[in-house]
Structures are given as C-alpha cells and as structure tokens.
Image (tube, rainbow, N blue to C red):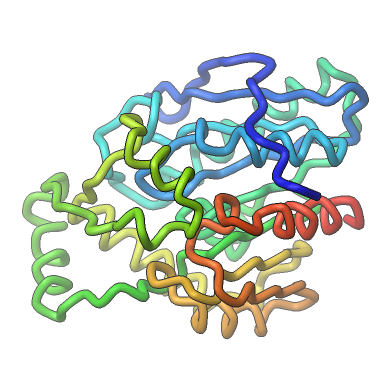
Length: 285
C-alpha cells in the first residue's frame, strides 16, 4: 500500500471518562468488517492519525480515534496523569463507544486496537492485567514505549520521584525533538505547526509511566491476545532493544524490527509498508 493520505472523519464526537470529556473522531468504510480503536502517543492527539484511519478503512475496518485525557481537544492538565490506569479508563470508555458506533453500522463484533508509543504502553498495561484486559481480537503495537532510549540522569530520575510525591503536577519540558520522530520533512513541518501537541510532562506522569513499563516488562508472558509489534530500529525515544526483548517473551507475537525507521513509524517515509503489515495482520485475526 502506498501512503493513502489523511481521511476526514465521518463524525466528530465527545464522550466522558472519569470526570474528563474526551474528543474522538469516527471513520467508516462502506461495508465495515469490524472496528479499530486507535491510541495516539504521548504529547500528541488523534488528529495526527487520520492517515492511519484511512489505511484501516481501506482494509475494511471502521476506526475510532480519540484524545486521551490531557491531550489534544480532551480536557485534563497537559502532560499529566494522576494514575496510569486513568488511561485505561479512557480506553474502556472508547471501547464502549466503539461498540455502540459499530452496532449502529451493523459491523461485526470484531474489535482491534492500533496503538503508538505511549498508546502502546497503555494497551500493553491493559493486556497484562486480567481485570483490565480489553475484549479485542488483536492488538497492533507501534514503537512501544517500554523504556526510554533518551538518557535521563539519575539525579533527574530521583528528582522526579520526589516531586511526584510533593508536587505531582509540576511540569517540565519533555525534550522531544521533531528530528527524532520521522525522516519525512513534511511530517516534521506538520508537527512543528501543530498547536494541539504539547511539550511538557509532569513529575507524576513520568513516575506513573515508568511504573507501567516495569509492570509490562515483568508480566509480558501474561499477554494472550495476538499482537503485532512494529518496532522502529533507529528509534532514539523508545528503546527498540527493550521492545524486541519483551516481544520475544509474548506467545505468538509477530515482530517486525523496521531498520532505519525513526519513532513515528506511521509518519515515516516508508509508512505504506507499515500500513501493509497492519492491515494484513488485522485481516488474519
């Protein structure tokens, strides 16, 4: 598949999760074979996934994308979460909405997750917990955020742990560079001009994300849902060696290390190749 370009949403909508109002976009093909729920990465928003949604609809699935709390058009403090499981609450709310929207279309009850980076960590955190595991047929994980590749000094890590207890909502620059996201100059320019993306992370978010990563690494063998791992080989944000090592412990995981690709595989120059992997995998599950 060549890169299909962004698709305008069929509907824009809002829904509730734990006192927050979340923004979502709904995309529908002519005869849906199921519904894909798309989880964006940290510090961005669902509007950056309209090309992903287009690829999914070309593959026959309706797609629901949404902004997690604290992101994009959803409410909540930017770059902050009190508990990582709040993101799981958002996913539960999105899953219920996808069920309702899919039923309105008469779509078969075939649900899949397609997630990137922190969205992949959210999906994995749910998959390793039997009490939170979503009822889905398959999960696509792009550049899973299971460990930071970016160096963080022990002093800064220690300060984050202390501040998470004292002033959990204290914001700090997240130090993400657009040059580390993709080789596509057009996508870089879009990201720089995108006012719905943010550039901060709070101390509590940092410690909660690190705890979620540790839990996934500890319990990876508990994942029973079919998973596709598209790991960016040249990722300098989410450590690709850690993702590959975790994936090797997951039964039946299909793993592709994409040599030379940067963190945002869905925005890379060769993203058509990634979309092919995703739609083929979903079609087989």
